[in-house]
Image (cartoon, rainbow, N blue to C red; front, side):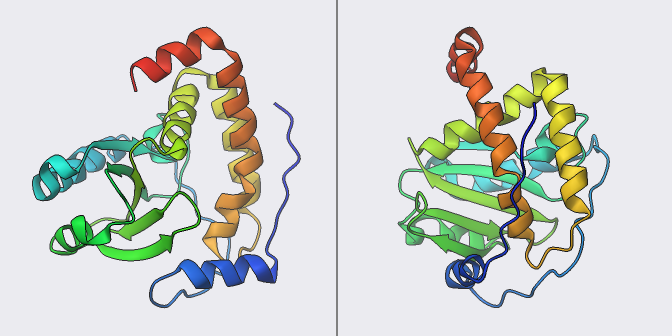
Length: 205
């Protein structure tokens, strides 16, 4: 998989980050520290998923381990990405206070991007991504994760891109995440073109 990576750290990008961030956003101004895959990452996810289910009950429609820490063998920032699906992510009063009661803090509010919300955990480093049910981003995150779990060549190529990008000095970590979008989208196209795989993966997500 050959990709041309575009690094965009324009002022408009920085302004957007400031706009959607709740509280202060300190610049990263450094390289990205990646760690080798840690078999404890899924354990940390399961422990946190139990806490979320306990506090939200039926309001937690789906909880998934996503991102690089969810892919065995893939290097990653040691941050557990969790996908939480609720009925309406824009209705913050229906879930944010419950999560705040167990140590979460709402840090990102993106009404113009799928009503995405991001909360940070307290005990361990967590990015809790919240979307409304049937949001297209949910399927994309799960398909990408599952494809990398079962296709070593694409996982290795993605890791190569991650390692190369990690050596850049990034003002914000979000810029690093955005720079990976091209390779992620190309991988999703491959998965969707593989009709048999796509059908199976969406049936068992």
